[in-house]
Image (cartoon, rainbow, N blue to C red):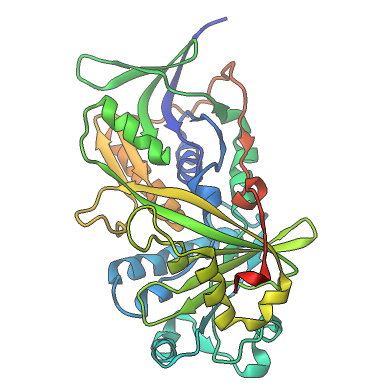
Length: 397
């Protein structure tokens, strides 16, 4: 049995970025494989809330106009994916909700911020009459304005599984152990166990793992990590998707809902997931519960347990350590380090990967990739599927 294999491109990292790049390069006729050392979607991808938004929440205060502008186009593209009118055809993937909602803590400054929404009506936002508000708001005891926006919430695992099943023969579990360089400094091959894998291009989309690949090539100060701690509730909760708008640039909290066993998970991001006073300091569970109940007083009786999930958002380095304005592809010879920045930017990163291949002037082989004697990874799990749940103690208040 041969231990040497050759491809047009090798992708390392099986998150949403690697999967979109795989789809694009295969569509363009390249012989491509993807290596994932853990599970498909593991880490940042399946820790995402799955919200496809057009930048409304970034545009409320005008603080991120570049991000808001890019997200408008990206949102349109995802709509086409889910309708099946553009590649990749994600019409078979599960959608949690075709709408998202904006609400407020019902204090004066926050209500003023929410009133900025009518200026964004061209992005599909509309104020709902009280009788048209989703039942979740009444059930949870909310009694103020609600805006509806035409923005999808996807089932992220379902999207990952689409790519995993479609390209199962091109996806493997394995780790790149060693790089062999050519005389021109380009990568000739990698070692994966006892296999030698040659390729014309190597695209690294392994999140925080990108840093170790940068170290191999002495690429300094290329990445940053921004810590995040998502908050989770479980219980007999109503389905709700959207953002609690405030006078701050970020929402006070964003909620997505996920059926789990015979309960519903509320998965909270936004400001409550950000550090308060440094890298490791977050709002306490008590503070988050109290904030939540100011907005939704009726939810107290529905909560059965809570937990948290901490992860670093790995991104390309920015001058001030802020969120990059777009996805990043950093070329170094025939190596490309790839960061999507946000899950919804994955198709834009795939565009950049396509351009990278063209700049290498390497024609596609139009061949089916060879099969490797490597195992297949599993599909990853959501944070709430692997966490240790804590009982909800009403005495905490």
